Length: 183
Image (cartoon, rainbow, N blue to C red; front, side):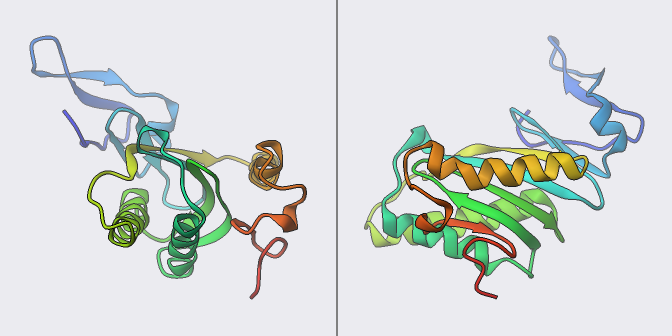
């Protein structure tokens, strides 16, 4: 069952059993705290307030060209203040990391970013087809230490991947109030 909606305040959700009928199975601690959750291949939980670390990848890990990275980076920034508050983002060769405080559901946010960027990139390349893997990884950030760890991870990712020598050298890196923040 793709895009199965899970919404149960006590942490139990219907899942298909071997017989094809839904069965009740625990889905973990996060679901008991979630206001909204869903499952595709990975479970997704969204609290009514909080910060999220999100990763999404290109289909079959296809490499992004600089103009495609521009399009994705600009798409992420365009939605800042409309669908979420953006704290950090980095567009790498075949995946993207972000930290946001969402104002809408994560599924709507991810659909907006992925569909717009894919449409624009495919149009520019005069092609059709998938740009993104269906899934993304999202994690609720639980405390200040985890928030700072994720910011550090995003900031250092282009350097560790040998895409830049320093933070300021990587065009597709943004950290609110620090790196490539022109506001």
